[in-house]
Length: 388
Image 1 (cartoon, rainbow, N blue to C red):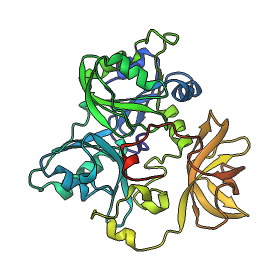
Image 2 (image 1 turned 180 degrees about the vertical axis):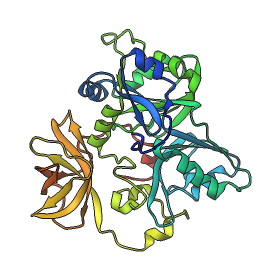
Image 3 (image 1 turned 60 degrees about the vertical axis):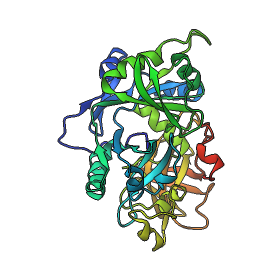
Image 4 (image 1 turned 45 degrees about the vertical axis):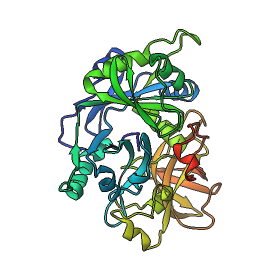
């Protein structure tokens, strides 16, 4: 989810990230993405990916939409739209959840954060921001005691990810203890700014996401980027969208607009674990009927060449699926990706397939996701429920 969503907005002047000036100082290659102007890369994508896996990388995620619901009925109301029962999420905790349409298709995948009894924050994909807000207003707009706030363009977001992330956050928050478990959050002060810090991310590494008012973004960036004074004067490496895409693909995390869309159900996407069927929500009834005919898979290309979205996945000379995302993994030293294949008992991890497109055919094998082990902290859910 938190990679951002494919940029498909047209006829729209991009919004500059609150950190654009500092990105230009660092020589970043800026691109238009999902209605925003953001860094694609600062230097070598391989170096940015390596830094995240081995030390830490700092990413600008100011494009992620923040939608806040306030009021005594906020938790109950938003539960009716999400596949998670928000009323069962403890205060100061977050959860990955899906927003479905009436047909059970995925309108968006997001993180829901319970800040207090009367305040819930939705972190949505940038490309779906306006659509999500309209959907929430349509269903909850007249709800008594619920206010829906959309501060688009008035906030910043940063993701500090990697095995050294905790030490870096602790260094700039003396006397404050950062969230301890995955998907927990708390208010902190960084660089003189009041921010919300959550132990979340979309890289598969331990790390934090930091949200605050846009005017504070540069000061928080500079604080997190300051040398630590130890371990070789270490500080995070600035990372861009290209590295984030590689990192999420290595983990098999889906990206809305590529691997998820409104015609894809949670079962097809392998996201049943994010659906709590014990409460009522829009789209729940549709999930009870119908049988899936395809499923999301990961793959590793065995040879030269990178698979791209739209390429055909063939098996034994028959087209059996389609690639939805492809990239090159600097850790696996191989091209990797995701796609959907028809249900078949032999189309499982290890099966040999061909990926055809652009006048060439690439040998590949289906692979279990994640393609490399996740290094995230245990979740608050680990004592309450088990998820893949």
